[in-house]
Each structure stands twice: as structure tokens, then as C-alpha cells.
Image (cartoon, rainbow, N blue to C red; front, side):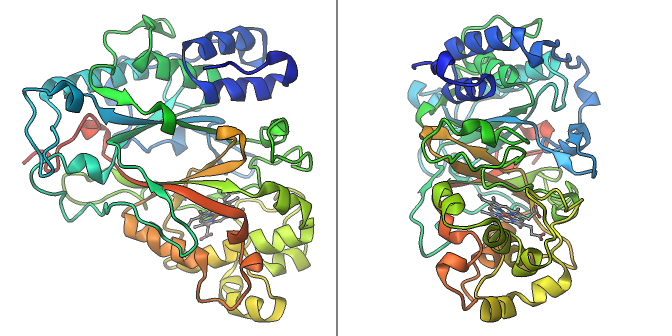
Length: 441
Ligand code: HEM
């Protein structure tokens, strides 16, 4: 894999590009840069006591930074690493055959996986300054087993969710999501699990995942979120110079406010053997960013992303700085979505999506991030919810097919092109290593 040209890029753009490339050479180059820069501080160490860690893999909020308004700040750097069981190729003798004739994982595979993941937790503090991660499993993975998932788990196969998309689907077994404010940690953790490393942050690696999983390098995804990061990507074709300096996402505004996110409790499966887990939807999309910034002005962008009222009353500020811990979409704003379509000819994305709130509470915990994978602007939209059906319902509200408005003015639909979708179960931590469909039975 070719490394990016250091001389042509700012430090931040170079480091981001290294995370996107991945692998040992990218890690060495990243360590060279971070040793001299702002990231030179030691990475906080993890724990030898696994019981001190949360029971939920998705328990990130308490261990994340907050902004001055109390909103959780996602870690800045992300990698989504797609995995398939290596036993299919190796013909593992211990495995049982599932309904579809593929091989189920063995107890040895489970132990190796758990040991490798515990090494990550010993090496790095469970926090945005260290590393947080989840390992999720697709419906295709669970097809390896006889019998199906319990009714308490709502995990259908992914499908196209709008008339204007024809996505590919994540049909491999699992997805590892690694996140840290430190780009070198994201790279090193992946290298520790799949590369040629003997130690991570001073901790010896007892085992790795290479005998258990194969990586799908062609479907590896990376991204970033945080003020200033998008504006450092203008070296990428399709990312205009007009991305505001302080924007945390490529489309130019803050998102993920405390009061417009579901709590971790709200998205947690509350019954059955996978209680304490959650489901994850990941859709990857291209964004027509040059049109977004080139054809629309700030007023139009605010109308389409938030609502026409947000634009008329100047509620948002340049990048969302006027909004404290909420999107500012009120019950009145939700009720007036149809009127906005009729009277203004524009409906806001947040205004439409908020129609799916239940008793005023959003059902989705969004942990999405921007990307320039493939050298083009996009978003990896990652959302947690108790069941995938809830995601589908919110996505329908966001699509707003019921609203009488032109596609160009229907929120941000016109600018997004979904090219992949995947659904996952994130089991509780105790079941994260290759769970069967009916654990503890
Ligand atoms: C590039 C893509 C996207 C961008 C830039 C974006 C941006 C935003 C912004 C700025 C808000 C308002 C602030 C906030 O509440 O966080 C918002 C709210 C929201 N968005 Fe998106 N969004 C994107 C894609 C999606 C997708 C694909 C979905 C899928 C359903 C979605 C669902 C939601 C929901 C559920 C809310 C909150 C609604 C509520 O307050 O109840 N967004 N988004």
C-alpha cells in the first residue's frame, strides 16, 4: 500500500491519510509524526482487572470527552475493520455446521478472541485518550448456527431503505470498530490484532486474531470527527476550501447533541440472553459536498439540515455554535414539517428525523463520522438502537417520502448516496467473543 506524500499535506491531513491506509508501514510513519507533535504524550495504560470495565461494549459516553455544553465528543479517529471467520478456509474440525453449511466457530477460537481483546484493554485505558472498541456480528454470522436468535434480538438482514439507493450489504461475519483521539492508537490496535507486533503500549501480545478472522481489506473503512479535522481535508478531491474551519463534520455543522441522542440505556437490549447488548446499523455514503457548499448558501444549508425556522430566526450560528445541547427542533418544529414543505418548499433533515421521537425521546444513539475513504467525501453513518426496526422507522421519517417537497429541498437527501448497509448485534462484553445464537442455554 502506498503511503501518502508527507511534503504535500498538513500534519493532520497526513496522519488522517495514514489511518486510512492502515498497516505496519503506516503505523511507523504515524509514530514518527506523533512523537514530534501534539500527540507525544504517553497513551494511558489499561487495566488488568476486566471486571472493572463496563458490561456493555457500547458504554463509551462516560469515558468520552464532553464539550462546554456537556455534549459527548466522539473520539476523533475511527476504523471499521470487516472480518470473516478464517475457519471457513481452514475447515475447522471442531466447528458445527450451521443452517447454511458454513462452519461455526470453535471454543478455541472464542478463547483466542477474548484473550486478544483483553490484551487491548490491558494496553489502553478504556477512554477517548486510550481506546474504545466494539465487536459486532452480522445476521450472516448467526446463520452459521443451528437455530435462530431469540425474539429479544431484532437483527434482520440489511436491505435497501429508500427508492433511490442500490447498496451493497455487509455480509461478512463481524465488524471491529476502533476509536481513539490518537490516530497512532487506532493503527497500533489493529496491527496488534492482525499484524507483526509483539507488544502494545508496553504490554506483551499473547495472541492475535489472525488464526480466527481474516480481514477484508477492500471493505475497511476509516474516518474522523472533531472541530478542524474536516477543514484539514481540502487536499482531497470534492472537499471544497469552503468547509468551515471549526466544523466537526464535513457538511459543516455540529451534530450529536446530548438532548437529540438516545441514552445508552435507551438503546440497550433489556431482555433475553443478549441483554446488555445493542444493535448497530452502519451505512456508508458519498456526499456531494461541492454542490452542498457551491450551490447553497449558509441560510439554505441551515434550512435543509435543521429547518427553515432555524434559518429565518438565525438559531444555529456558523457551525452550530449557537445551539447548546440540542438541535433546537421543538414539538412545534416537528408538527410544522408538512407546513414547511408547503409554505417554504424546504424541510429540514433534523426536523424530519425528529418525527420518529417517542414521547419526546430520540430512539437512536448516533456515532457517525466523516470520511474521505477512496479519496472522496462521505459519511459512515453508525447508529445504535435497541432493535434494527427502530432504525428503519427513523430512516423512513428522515426520508420523508410523505412530504410534498422537491428532492433538492427535502432535507439533505439530495446530497447523500448510500452505497453500503450493514446490521450488527453488539453483544454484551461477556458474549463478545464469537457468541452462539442461544448463549447460556
Ligand atoms: C452526512 C449525513 C448526515 C449529517 C451531516 C447529519 C446531520 C445531522 C444534524 C446536524 C442533526 C441535528 C443536530 C443533532 O440533533 O445532532 C441531525 C439529527 C438527526 N439525524 Fe442526521 N445527519 C446525517 C445523516 C443521517 C442519517 C443517515 C440518519 C438516519 C436515520 C440521520 C438521523 C438523524 C436523527 C435521528 C437525528 C436526531 C433527530 C432528533 O432530534 O430526534 N441522520 N443530523
